[in-house]
Image (cartoon, rainbow, N blue to C red; front, top):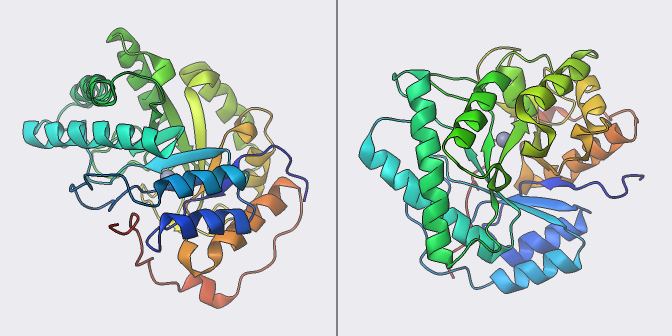
Length: 321
Ligand SMILES: [Zn+2]
């Protein structure tokens, strides 16, 4: 399969240990991997790094996996007005960044969050203040900036009071970060195709990409868009919902994703899949589908059971050592 140099791979479940996850990444030919470092739906973080961490890093490196992303826990919200929640989010994200350094990660990606009924501009102000605090705390904890991953903001589908579902929102956030004196080379944007679709960007149409890439470049700057989440969607265009589907088998279809993977700029970004059934063998299936699309080949039809998978019971971090 001709995908030389492309950094692509799944969000791997690591509940059976980091070593197994690294071996799985190698086995399926991934060149990039995303993981949780701990339980993504809890505040509590392990005090010490997982025992298998050194082995995990060695096996990834030996297996040709050249980009690692950490997905931050879902509870984090740096945009809201609740001080306690905000402070907790800062501590948690600073922790993710320092742990991300221990993992050798390039990116720690987080959901932007919700202003919870406040003004959008107030939410962005809170967020930027939080991002600054996160970077400072992480540097302090790590004794310097060296090796600290980029703190990456993921576009949202736009549910509720969520910020960051439009390129304009993302642009305003980066602008506010610059105004606050934050170094953009330590921040970044992740574009999730399913979230774009939920937010009303017609990722499925043949013509979407030209205008979208041009606007992204103008509003965000090429150097600030650092990774992709490649997912199809189960919901309608503009639904504001976030329901991922197998590549090329959801509502957006395959043409837009194919063009994205072949785009001279966006198609070269490290790409991570967050499709269903990662721990049920669908990791390799979706990775293969992405590789087929990138090569301009037709996608096989999926069996009916692919669409009735239980929501993964394993959205978790590595087991306690
Ligand atoms: Zn995502």
